[in-house]
Image 1 (cartoon, rainbow, N blue to C red):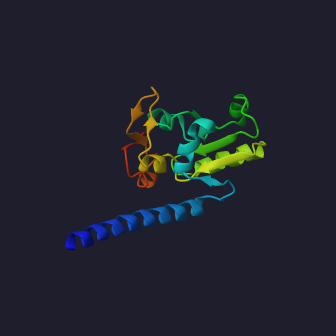
Image 2 (cartoon, rainbow, N blue to C red):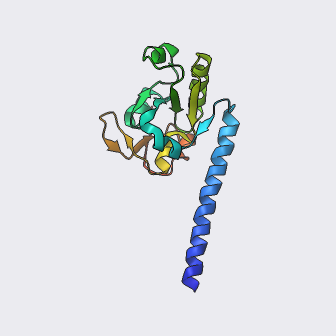
Image 3 (cartoon, rainbow, N blue to C red):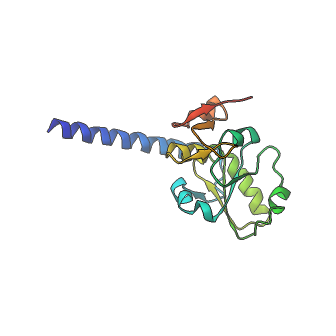
Length: 168
């Protein structure tokens, strides 16, 4: 009987840890985001990944370490809406934008909305949440990798799985 209690206690502890992490992530995103762009969960993206336009709002060095399959680098510091319009993406196509956690991607999503794109979503928790859910990422050679650019020590604490990579 005590083994059952121990297993139940472990399940409750793991669930509460996950719940607390989700609540903390939600608080972080509320602190930095205006929530002008609707979120989409990593599990929802996983289900439609091959049917949407996926944009990575991180920098090139982050993208080259790893990115979600089928993502196109949009960038952040040097983002230009012309880069998107030149790709002939229709204004009503479903576009999901991600970054490390979902902060930079909201900024890029807002620029897409301002340019007339109507079906834009922000990936909740970004590539960190994607990897934390054991979904695969690929490197610049198209190979599955465990490496994730963790952006900085401050933001890297949100990445619980994979191998953190930092660069200048």
